[in-house]
Amino acid sequence: MALSDYFTGIQHVGIPSVDLDKTIAFYKSLGFKQAGLFHNGANRCAFMSFGNLTIETWEGDPTARKAGAINHISLNTPDVDKAFAAAKQQGLRLVDKEIQSIPSFWEHGIRYFNILGPNEETIEFCQIL
Image 1: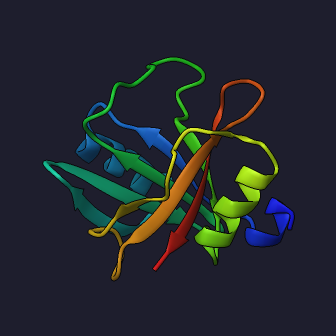
Image 2: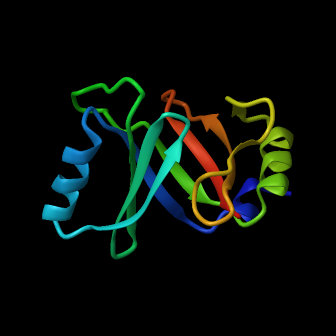
Image 3: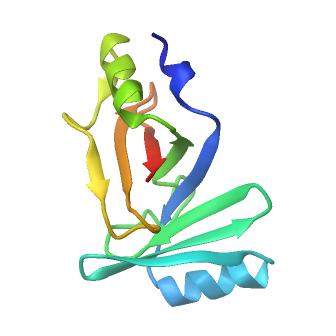
């Protein structure tokens, strides 16, 4: 069981926002379409799409405001349970001890977990339910 058996490619790139409305307007000016706008507690999260690229941007988290501002890369995961088991078996550095969920995203929510790469980069494995 290899983790690469349980993802199909990049789902999105996550970038926290200082001003979500300004960020949405910026990406729209580049030709992106707003694919979704969701609430996560008191904060909002937008998904901006252009072709095969989707950017997740949200309010409420600290921003680097310099090069390296990308928070995470998300890999599309059709079966997050199997992917999580494979990541544990492979001995990867898990950020989450269990699979996380956000029920307010998309029609039926998402389930995901994060690992750290060799440069402390966060890689998310996300299943849209």
